[in-house]
Amino acid sequence: MSDSTASLRREPAKALDPAEFIKANMRLAPVPSVPEVRLYQAHPGSGLRRLLEP
Image (cartoon, rainbow, N blue to C red; front, top):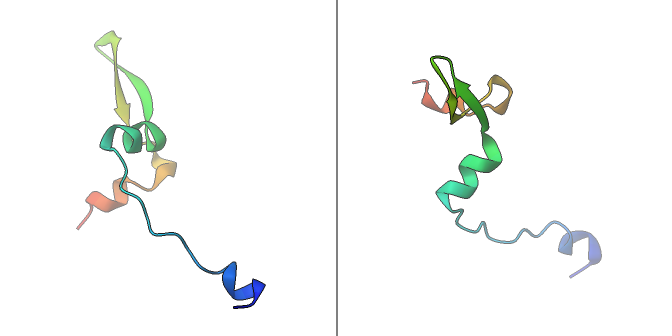
């Protein structure tokens, strides 16, 4: 196998822990009525919201 084809091989995708996925793809934002509480939200640039659309 040549070096050029070896570089095209991909490792199998490993399963992500749901908590790791959320932390990597969402940001913490305060709740408007309770500012001391912060929730993970998908920001518009992440592209995660499009997964919810039919």
